Image (cartoon, rainbow, N blue to C red; front, top):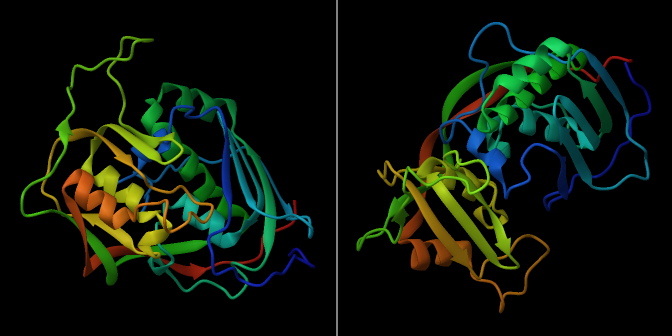
Length: 290
């Protein structure tokens, strides 16, 4: 066991997160790898991928902020709590989706470095770009099992959430053209959603489940899961204007995400108690030494 792990008071506000690396330079393309809304990421078979070399060490006591570095088949996290690592690995959108965590899970911080084997790199290189993030999440799940002895189960429970629905007069969305191709590669564009200006978000070819996932991570949503109940089956293009991106926007300059979604997209976020998948932590330990 590692002794003398850094201990800090829990933060009521979200920690700063920086994603660096070569995965998806365009907007927030990693959101395309998300599974069905309100569900967590499961391995699809018994042979979950695993890193070849891993290092887990106590974080520098003077370090601040969470930093994830993602590059092809390499993973690094600086000043990451167990909570941070589990939420990333299983694509957890709300703390309410986690049951049974230990008392130290958001108070002790670690630096993690991991590298995949040549065989896993070969597998990674065969994947579509929108599946590579899932593969990295599964690798991290294996690391958590190996180094933190994490054992989990999955349950569905009724949780306070938001239902994303269409307003009475209909959605204000443009259905994407399936033939739209990249001007660089000539291949069909993958769904993308991300910041395109100081207060602007642009989505291209996105399904509503992906929109619900993006909304789930907004601070204004208040740590709830957003579940798609629009009934819209297509992929859509849209622009959201006047919204904030972190950093404590002034009330006068930013539009509430609830208002923006309603007025600009013809959608509504309705509070509801909905069935949501929950990750139950059956067992976890402080990480074994390298």
